[in-house]
Image 1: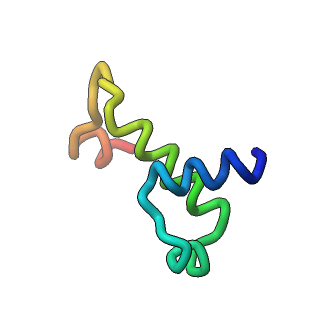
Image 2: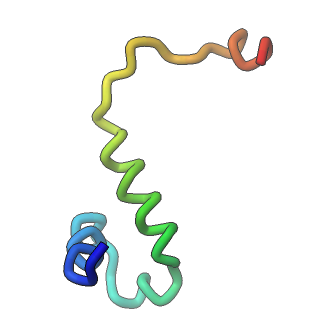
Length: 54
């Protein structure tokens, strides 16, 4: 990932320069990945019974 792309991702997440001092690159990448997954429509979701069986 290049510096301009990283800064673009930060801007898309709405992060300020002050917040960048408190976050790691990995955490910001995870935040962006999770944001992209928010709109994904899963075929099925795990239920409590699924977690209990796991």
